[in-house]
Length: 168
Image (cartoon, rainbow, N blue to C red; front, side):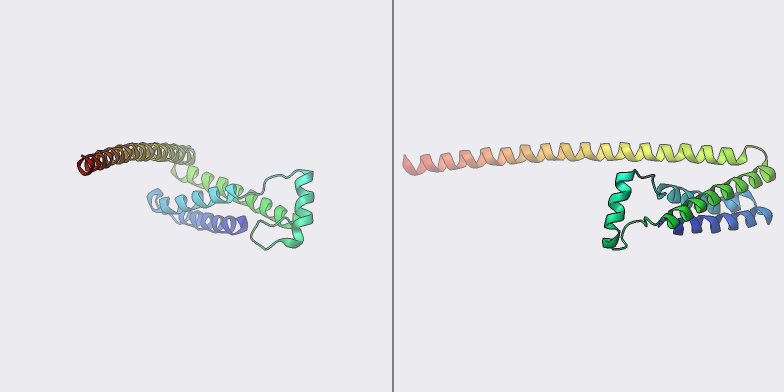
């Protein structure tokens, strides 16, 4: 549920705000900043998407069969989640302003830009690693096929030799 992630992110931002006001260095606040950004990204990924009328009708008719596994379709829950998301965005902005005031203008933007670049590079590296592993798997499969071909040919000729020796 996004409410949980949003609540965790808000409390982490409150703690970060207290650290910044308490005179902690940027390095001491780094892990808390990372937690805040990670939790806020998780909350954004789980925001409810706008639904069309047909989908709303289907969900309304299926509401009685809801097992509690899916997200709530209750309008009050959706509005509450959206309000919490706006509170989270405002809290992130406030913390950014606090960091800019304390450590100089552009500090927060620099942190966000550097983090975005590193996340992008990590995603690219993960994709490259996945492609590399797929290539290794394909080569291994080709080698295994060649080995099985060799074993098949060896068995064929061994059987042929055995047949020839038995019959002639």
